[in-house]
Length: 502
Image 1 (cartoon, rainbow, N blue to C red):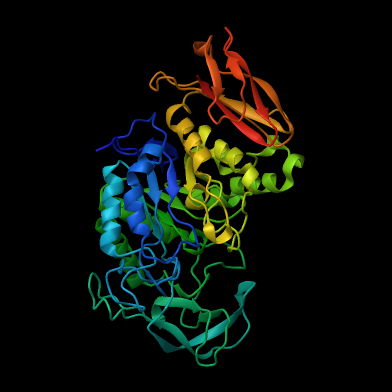
Image 2: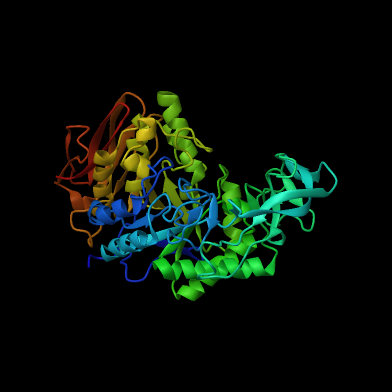
C-alpha cells in the first residue's frame, strides 16, 4: 500500500493533518467529474483504472460526484431521487446510475484507498426530485424574489412529494417521504403551473442565506429540516453512506440553502459515528468574504468552504487581460483571510461553460491560476476534472501536461516559509524556502498578465550557489541563487514560471 496522503481538516480554527499524515505533506484533491460526462456507465471503472496514475501525479483525495440514483439515468446526481440506491436497484428505468453500478463504485473506492487516496462523497440533502406520485396539499404562492412575501391565498395543489422507492423494497431503510416532510415545491400538477409554492402547513427553514428574503428553497421538493423524522433519517443515511463506501469526508452541496444549525449537527453526528474527523467542505456559493466568514462561524469553524471570491478574481483577471492589477489577485479571498478553512479552486462543474454559475477562467490564465492554488502555502487546492482531462462537449482541451508539472511542484518543492512579491501591477511572484524534511524542496513562482519581466526574490541562504530552472519550461533562464539567498527570476508575457533546483 502506498503512503497515505490525506487532506487537511479545519477543526476549532486550526488546520490539523488527518490521522497518519505528516504535517509536511501537501494534500491536493481532484473533483473527479464534469457536468457533461458521457452517460456510458463507465465512470467508476475509469476511476478504478486511473487510481494509480492519480496517486503518482500527486492527487491525494478524490471528490466524487453524487453516487445515488437521480431522477433519470443521465442525471448528474443533483436531481437526487433515492439516496440509498447507489446503482443497485431497478428504479427510474435503470439499475446503474450515470456513472455505473454500486459494485463498480465500491471496487473503485477500494482501489483509490489502496493507493493512499481519500474519497469524499458529495452530499445532496437539500431537496429531492423524481417523486413516485403526486399528493394533494395546501400551498401558497410566494414572490420568487422575496420568498417571505405570499402572493396568493392557500389552495390545493398536486405536488410531486410522494417517494416510496418501490424498486428498493425497503432495503437499507423503510423511510418513505410524503408532503409533510417538505416545505416547498415549484410545480402544481393539478393546474400544470410553475410557481414557487410554500406548503401551507409549515414555513421556510431558518438560518439559511438571506438572499431573496429567505433562500431555503432551491429546486424540486424542498426538504423541511424542522421535521424531527427528517433530521434523524438524514443522519442515519449519512452514517450508512459513510460505512457503505468507507468515505473519508464530504462535500456538502447547496450549503446556503440548508439550515446552518442542522448542517453543523449533521457533520458532528457523522464524525462521532465514524469515530474520525471526516474532512468536510461546504459549497456556500457567495462572492462575499463576510458571508463565508458568517457561515463558518455558524458552523463553529469546524468545516472548510470553497473559496468563491478567489475564483471570481481568477475569472476577472482572465477576462480583462493586461488591464487587471495583479497585486489584487488574492484580495477579498478566503485563502488570504482564513487559509486553514479555504478550499481553493480554479473552476468546477457549475462554473464551466453553459452552466448555472458560469465563471470560466480563460485558457491562457489557467496555468497562472493553478500556480496560485498549487504552489502557495495556505488553502487546500482542488483540481477540476474538466481542466485535467478536458471537456469534449465544449471542445475544451485537456490541461493535464501543465497540471502534472504544477502537481509535481506541489508534491516535491512547495514547502517552507513563503515570501510574497505582489508589488507590481502585472508581474507578481512568491518563493518557498523549502524544508529540511523534503530533500531538494523550495521554489520560486513568477507570473505576468502583461509583457513579462523579472524580479529579484529571496529564496533563502541555504540555497546559495544552487542553479534553479523553470520546471514548466516556459522560460529558459538559469538562475543562480547568490550568497545572500536572492535570485533574479524571469517570466514571459501572459505566462508563469516555477523555478526549482536544477
